[in-house]
Image (cartoon, rainbow, N blue to C red; front, side, top):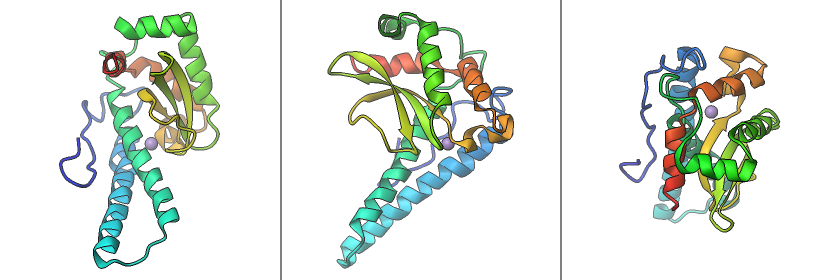
Length: 203
Ligand code: MN
């Protein structure tokens, strides 16, 4: 959680080498320390710019500033969710339990069917983006969302339960152009307990 008026890079709940071989230490370190950090810094720089402009009462380009801010905050929030919905393979992977298992089975017919559809969504994200499992409070149904960049195509207000980063920076060191292998590997380290916990926060 943020401890002041600005964003901070969260620590991982596991060591940089603990997701290997599904995500290598080098891949995870660069992703967290460089890429995620850049979104934190980017968002904070814009907030500082806004603070300064308001204090000095000078004009800014509101439209382009807000577009850029949405991109960086989206990147920060999604990465923070992503780290926590993974765990070392000794603890992650397998099949979900609890309410999550019930909700997914009811909607998709089976966990296998859900995983297949989610993988298809992940593999078909165009360019840079994310696959996400979300929950609609209006219909009480889970949905799969394909996010473009960090902030486009999002259903407003839907609870995000699980995300998978499909930007090339998430997998290129380990898997080069073979994104589907990275998507398969994700299922070995998905932290179902965390996803179930997020779902339970709604009920
Ligand atoms: Mn990323």
